[in-house]
Amino acid sequence: MPPKILAMVMAGGRGERLYPLTMERSKPAVPFGGKYRIVDFVLSNLVNSGICSVYVLTQFKAQSLIRHVEDGWSLNSWLMRDQFITAVPAQMRTGDNWYQGTADAVFQNLYLIERFRPDIVAVFGADHVYRMDISQMVAYHMEKGARCTVATVPFNVDEARGFGIVEVDEDWRIVRFEEKPPHPTPLPHDPTRALVSMGNYLFNTDTLFELLSRDASKETNHDFGRDILPSITEEGWLYAYDFSKNRIPGPSGEESTGYWRDIATIDAYWRAHLDLRAPLPSIDLYSEHWPIRTPHHHYPPAKFTWDDYGRSSNVINSIVCEGCVISGSTILGSVLGRRVVVRSSEIMDCVVLSNVTIEGGSRIRRAIIDKYNVIPAGTAIGYNLDEDKKKYFISEEGTVVIPRGQGPAALCSPG
View 1 (cartoon, rainbow, N blue to C red):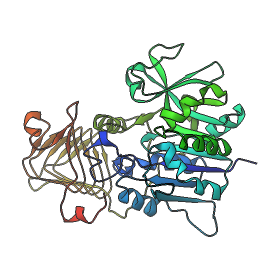
View 2 (view 1 turned 90 degrees about the vertical axis):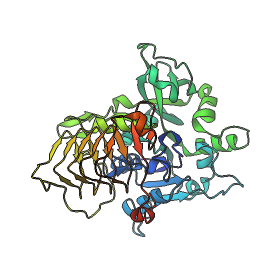
View 3 (view 1 turned 120 degrees about the vertical axis):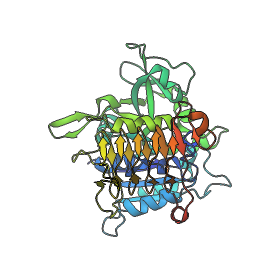
View 4 (view 1 turned 135 degrees about the vertical axis):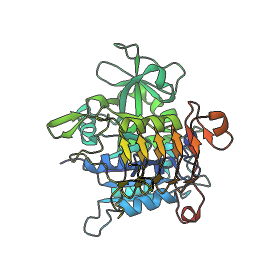
């Protein structure tokens, strides 16, 4: 018999380094790729892997995330009681505190696990963009006789400092786990890369209960990466799963997944969108065999037309979502969300979220424009950062961010 699996998706993150995109929404609720939200990737991976019993644990600025899950991910039915995707707001069930860390978030919801009685609990993050067949990680977990398995991916050493770093023996048993060390330990056979935790874990249920109860009685950060995993490396049953070996169905058999991005900062968010615009993108959003799912919106098709002066539109290497109207404009290397209107303007290397209007004569490059903005005619953004700093947020690498608009439509939307 296959194991009974319950997923707990950690979706309560503040996403402070993604500010101002997280000014009015949590990090998992941030739109991505034109029509998705970041949380859609973990939920799609779970459902595509046959794991359809999912609690989404929310906390900070969660209304738009909760509505998104309810609108697009509801599986609740009295016919299939064990198939559901349900948002669970923080409730302070074990004391007077909100979630103190990832481990505490699960600890405060142990009653949900007790009711479901799973064999394995999948504790997965909601902050990443990737495709993964989780059933292969489950098979690995059972084959190893592991009590806990951590999904890992080889990462450039210089970029690995912001993650949990895993060291393994020849059998991929974890012998050391460090959370965000200043000097990550490289792989023995490759000094340029380190093994990074993806923040995705499988626990045998009895092991999870034991670890969480033990942690709750101590003065810790109550976090899996900072406290629990480093404390159990000597017990001999903590294993690493190599994500680079994961394969998913493709048109010509199986294909590698490989791509994984933690959308932690504004510049990482911008670069991940540039990955999408490539003719052969690193992550395939068009696969019928492994779809990335999201709520359906009944908008008309995108339209490209001449402007009032007879100038045609030119869209190159870009993603343009439904409901957009592009007239007399050039769109180059950009991602446009739903219902974006661009009139007689030039947009280059930009991420434009839904319900934005860009009036005529505007020139915008390397910018992220949040929802419900109207860009006045003749606006120039991204060409003079000193001037842009007076009006907008500028990232460390020079990406201009225009926060969510505050018009009448915006006031009716949770984010």
